[in-house]
Figure 1 (cartoon, rainbow, N blue to C red):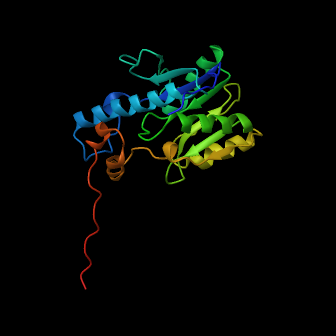
Figure 2: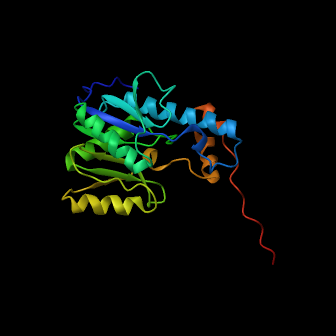
Figure 3: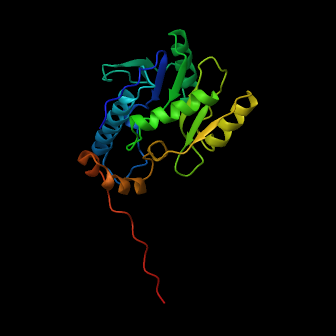
Length: 219
């Protein structure tokens, strides 16, 4: 692998929201609670490693109701407002006050994301002023790029992709919709765990479960 010769961007922040530990990945019922907690920690480590290697990111902030025991190189922001969208709005304003010139919202559950994925996404955002990467289904939002000065209202939840794009256009932005497997695939359902068998990191493969086979059809 060649050395990264890019100059790290000044004033570029990544903002990663994390729920309270007991609320993380509760839909992964195929895993016992202790395994889910280990997986959540490993996912955050993966996303942090990708952000550290991205030349387009200078600083990393994590907004959470439990800001203890976070990586040393991340700024911990206490979740001052209830709900993801309100918490992100408050955190974005805090980063703006710290001199952020652009912000990337990235979830902490992307097992295949890389620094190159993030760099490509940010470059799209800088060219257009706004960028979005959806989930695999094409209905949710897995990454957002925006300047913190834009009065953008976060709409994470059902149909967030459509809602985010509509709001961007109402604000006169020309959104770039980025398709990238590392950004699109997140772990939400039991069926997603089967994909971990292909992960290069053997620690992820220990959480993989076989994909359910269809029942035979009686004729």
